[in-house]
Image (tube, rainbow, N blue to C red; front, side):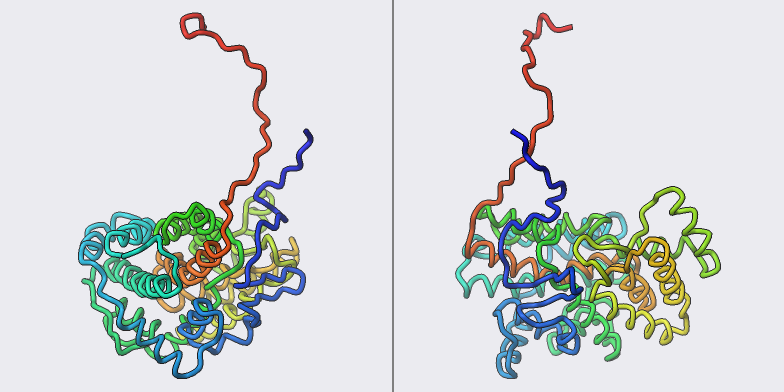
Length: 374
């Protein structure tokens, strides 16, 4: 039988979702009916609530939600001890993956997807992920764990646990916006991974641990780390044209460009570009923004490829003083909300995900007993 093969599931629609729409033709990203451009001035907590409850909160609902975040129990000490032992030995995303998996021992009713139980586990998991990510960042600076300051907002508390002091409002707002832009993107590789695991009726920790493994890859969440390494390799704006000429001649991949869905500019990239420019000026070092801007123009002129979400997040984080190796963890912290929401959506209307594969191997092989094989 002549079966058509869609490698990478390119163009294949496998299910429905109400969570986010990636409009590739018009280059728009929609979160539960809202254009992302309308949500960029919200707090991260508001958008978390939107994904978990399918509506934007009013003032009292947001206040109650913030209280539930702040009332989350402490992170188990064995996870903190594990991070302190391996922080400067094991890559951050691998530590995150193991730490999240270790949470299984302290979570109750993981396989129960009642609304109340799921929301409670979800809030706990999101808050614990922020503590884990912050502790990894801090330990990589050779500094000891700091307990969360529960009087602060989600993002402000995350930065407090990393820095050991309260961050200024501009830094909090920038990271809030970055988290919002990264929270979900339909059936991307890591989200689809989470849904595949959830479709087997496995538990939430198993599903998000698998998703972290998928996000870790340089062609997915690890791309912004590779972008910054690429910019540092180029070194200076005067080197860009020769570097690009050599890369194109050798048909090498340019990190941070192109998208499987968007036919034009990634709508998230324009907001991150503004942040990169702002932080370049604020840090009195506009070099990385200027390099990124020139490279973006040249790549479009020569290859008609647009920058994606990873491209300008790299120079933004670098100008903020965030370690290159920690970039993907920030992606994971934001995307945790999206993964959780997709897991709930999957189990509410579940069918185990089991695609076909076209076999192209040998046929009609003759079996030979082991004693007669050459």
